[in-house]
Image (tube, helix red, strand yellow):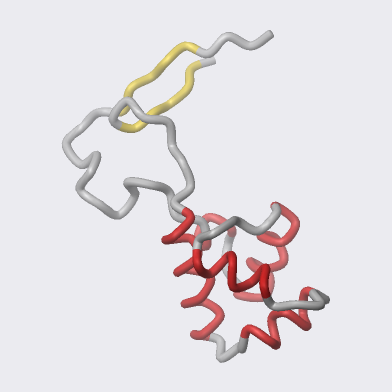
Length: 101
């Protein structure tokens, strides 16, 4: 099995861009933070603000719920570092062998 990297770096989630995606998708649907809080059954909106600010990421379960609410795929919500930028434009993917035990 080989591990694909871009420009010699492993793909990583960009927390800030992912947070902006969550905020943009929520606003595009006209959903307030309070309404999203209620949909999730949270007692406080803090988790949603943390997601939107890129302080932390939703759990996988919460990503699934967000995708359902937004009518989007999880891939559309999550932003990968270097994606949509020129950082890796001219670099070929690099494959590293991965040893599985």
